[in-house]
Amino acid sequence: MMSADRPATRLATRLAFLVAGFGVACWAPLIPYAKERLAVDDGVLGLLLLCLGIGSVVAMPMTGMLSARYGTKPIIIGGAIGMALALPLLAVAPTPLTLGLSLFIFGGSLGSLDVAMNIHAVEVEKAAKRPLMSGFHGLFSVGGFVGSLFATFLLSLQLGPLATTVMAALLMLVAAYAIAPRLLTSAKSEDGPLFALPHGFVLLLAVLTAIVFLVEGAVLDWGALYLTGAGLVGTEQGGMGYMVFSVAMTVMRLSGDVVVGRIGDRATLFWGSLIGIAGFVLVLTAPVVAVAMAGFLLVGIGLANVVPVLFRGAGNQSVMPAGLAVAAVTTTGYAGMLVGPAGIGFVAKFTSLPASLWMLTALLLLVTLTAGRVAGRKN
Image (cartoon, rainbow, N blue to C red):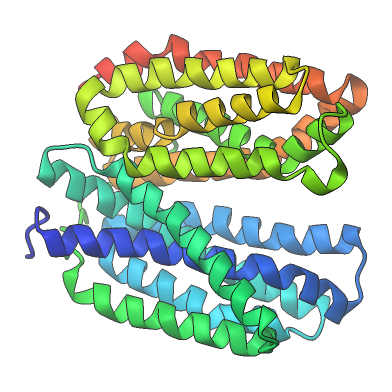
């Protein structure tokens, strides 16, 4: 079996994260084309987009079970290929039903790839005996940037959605072919359980991950509305907050392995969450846009490496099999990102958007208060 502590294996793991981010980002510029092609309103489009998230959340627990039986390598390759093959379908699906089914398949492939590559990353990090998880997650963000740039550039050349997605799919297939021989052939745990509900320490990790993912989803879905509603920016500049947040998060994750290796997991969780809270306080009290942008910057800096540390905790605990724990944490996190923004909207309807964001800020205190327990636990 290939050693986990090899440069080729680490590179293959990074490429898996890159492919996942690239594939998702290539779909985003196609959404306006899909809406125009199908002639649907925003309500129907929102339901269709939900199919991607449902596919991901359904696939994630199944991936934990399959990884326990067959290892992560075939699932990583299968997930990448599934995303690549589904991508052109998203560009040509002629009816809402076919687009919904295609998005479900695309989301299922993404969910499978996401869980399997995180389980694989935990193994690689353990073998290296040094932090690597932040860098792996940073490559997902880089893939998102590259994929968005790639698709937007080809569409601007008037190549059309189908040609654009076919070219993107070919790149993804080439990447899958390149990483296949370099991935670990993980040992199978056929004697262990193939399914286990998260409990105890793993449940705590899952809740914390859901909170952080909820914050990320809130910045994406509600950040622009808050800035414009507060009169800090015009409608056309509403996306500035998320742009600053995402750039800060990407940079910090790419440098995060060095930072976490120097200060440790506990300090990363404790100070990272406090910096994130301070950022939200700045955003919610900002008298001018510059202060709000500084707040979004702090949120990105503070929270960038919290999720990688939580994933590491899921992979290193012994309450339940590592693969199932990573799957549970990933599923709960994505569920938080999917359901959370809608929950924020529900609370905002009966209070206000700032009030709901203050509640979200308070939730981050749970990460701060449990940092010692999460980082100090050895099993």
